[in-house]
Image (cartoon, rainbow, N blue to C red):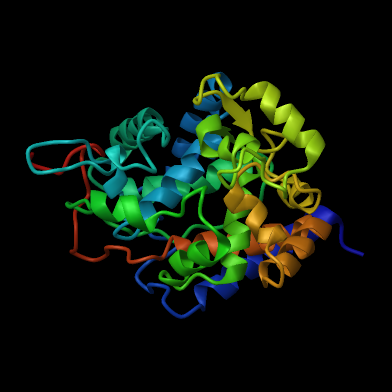
Length: 332
């Protein structure tokens, strides 16, 4: 019988092959895209991330989130990295991103390291996709091959960033609709939400669940009462709304399937988390149960869903550009 680690590796490999065959994947992306132009790209990115992790354990989860917030607006084109300028109204200042999305300095460090070895070759969009994969792997999650070959966008859409990104306050139906717009299924939704198995959230993203959920002065009835008491201590009603709370109480920095077992005991931190399990009759309930019972199944689905998400409207060929600085359009 195969070991659990070899089985996990087989499942992730299978996930990649299946994702590659999915309709909508762009055939111009390739896992060997930089094999002749920047063959040591993965090791360069890994080196920067390992260094960053040594001083900031949270950075791995933050980079996965950064990739997600990029792809849901204009596709995976690194538009989220562009700073404000005379012609750019940065997506960084959109509601879901402001004072929340982070990791830009680490992306800068990666870009600098890559440019020193492979100048004018690797896009910032590909750096985001590769950094997300390596971050998951470094935290104990699945390793999978990332299709590369994206180019960087030259435009932004702050309005779309305000409306297209799922909110922690939204109900399941609304979130399903936003995923469906990108051809992402309920399985993709649950698998990608599983990235909340590591990282942290600020109190303001869920404190309405603790004190005044429906405007009647009562907490969210789906919250485990013991968990509720613990969260109230960390996020008092008159306390700071920016206090950081671990998504996962047990293994906060590890990429595993504890997120799903937490949902089963009503210990999902965000409303958008718990809705996956507590919405009666929803197809997501059985998917949560499946991932909670098998970490290998979760890892397989997560890898496939990340590859699928990474194929949202990529710029390829001669479209877009390869930015010299991830924060500004070339020639600005």
